[in-house]
Image (cartoon, rainbow, N blue to C red; front, side, top):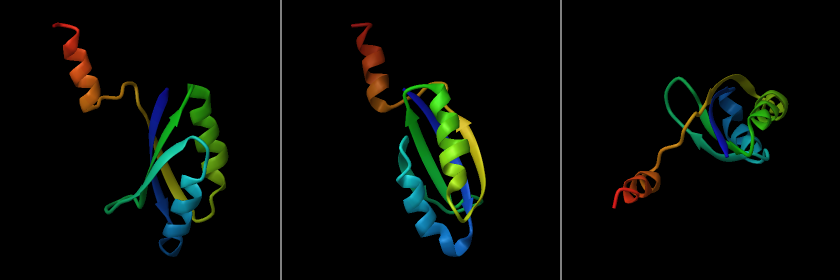
Amino acid sequence: MVAAVVLIRAERDRIPEAARQVAGIPGVAEVYSVSGEWDLVGIIRVPDWEQIATVVTERLARVQGLTATHTLVAFRVYSSEDMESAFDMFE
């Protein structure tokens, strides 16, 4: 599984609808409405690297009202479950 975080700027009056449309894109696991420089944060989880390009450059680019995106591709995912299982191997 490959993950990416997409920071999204949207036109102010279109943020809720844009968030719903982004959330409906296959490969988008979650969408958060956030404060600060960006309006939305999308979490992408897909089986391979090539699909990140499809989600971002083909599907996400078609959502009306988005004005900018910044994609951060994850190399590794760390979670509390991962950390616990990592230390289990030493027991």
